Structures are given as C-alpha cells and as structure tokens.
Length: 268
Image (cartoon, rainbow, N blue to C red; front, side, top):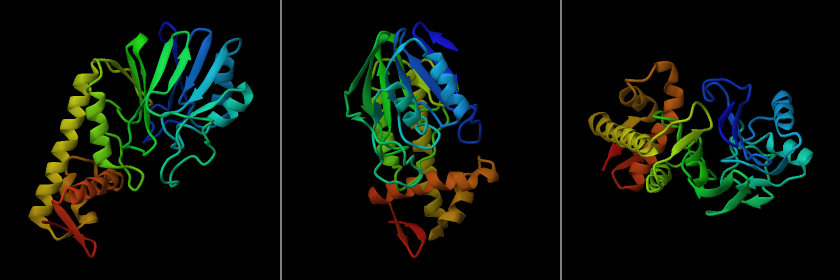
C-alpha cells in the first residue's frame, strides 16, 4: 500500500494478539530505499520485500527494536541486498532476536538518507531498552515501532522494559512538531501531540490506580493486585496486564512510594 509519495507499507503475515493485523514494514524512498522494521523471517514476507524493491537501490535495513516480530527478517534481507543492518542491541537478551547484530548502531541523531528524505534516530527506551523511533521530517512522519500504538499502551515487560523510561521518552517525543504517527501495528495516526498526551494520561491514571489499590489492599501479591487494578480489562488478558503492572510497581518503588517484602507490595 502506498501511504504517501515514496512511502509504502507491507504488512507481514503474522497477525495475532500482540501484532494486530501483522507487523508493518515500511519502504521509504523512490529509488534509494530504506526498509524499516523488516518483521519476522517468514519466507513469503522476505520474498515480497525483495520483489517490492527490485530494481531499486536499497540503502539499509533499519529496525526500531529487536523483538521477534520486528527484526528477524533483517539478516536475510541485508545478506540478499548487500546492505547494512541499522539498530541497537537490547540490554537484556530475553525475548529478543538473537540473529540481529547491527552493522551500524543507531545512536541518537543517526541519519539514514533516502531520496524521499532523511530518517533521524530518536532513542525511545521503555517498551524495549533498545527502542528507536525514526523521524522523517520531510514527510512529517514519526515511525514509532511499538512505542506508540494509538491510544493503546504497549506492554512494558521487565527487565528490558522500563515504565519510567517509557514515560520520559513519550515526553521527549511530545516536544517534536505535531506529526503523523506510523506505528509498527495498525494504521497511520494524525495529530501526534493529542495521541501522546492521551497515552501519558492513560499511564499516569493507571499508575494512580496501582498506588490506590496497594494502599487499600496491601500487603498484596502481584497476582492479586492485577484483579484490583485491571477491572476494566478482560480477565483473559490479565496475564499480559501483569507485565505492565510489575513495571508500574517498580517505577513506584524507585519513586519511593511502594515497597516489596516477601513478594507482597505495600505503600511506604
């Protein structure tokens, strides 16, 4: 699908609970093209990307982070095309793609040049320690990976995920111009300022609910606390909500507001 001049999207055939319709792979450029978030190493998807870039000069395979639905196709594509893999290595190896070893590290401000404009790396840890959003000023787009998925907050799973980092990175993105957001799952979203403000508000409201529940029911285990904090979430999803709850608790512990003793949480 062509989203704008020089910007195309291919959706990987990996739909699911965490991936929605599938992982969005973006092809950015007219004749000098960057492949962004190549997705899983599903042969049909890799072949579709090679076919979509045939006759073009691919400059790099770029990733936002190295979860298994984002980066495994990077290595076969980079090898087939003879181009570098650009991204970062996560702090913790759990749940990460072991095949991804960057040829170039996407430090803050790192630039990937295409003939549709430059992509600028912005460090956005939180969902993953190595998460990078890519700012495309010429198109007025921010490629957000899993950092921003609309008004749905991504799962923050410790130890590699960090709730404080996530909120700080959102605040940094809010200082950019108002942009179109291009997430790794789902559709384009206009008005980045409004989307980011809603996400920050959602997370802070959830944090307040966590604190109030610990105050009312503590000392309380993480498993019991999920039932109190996520009354608005389908119980079938509570095992997933537990990850972000733990991230909230660890942030509150760092803030000096709660404490854990013998697996039970209490307010200070």
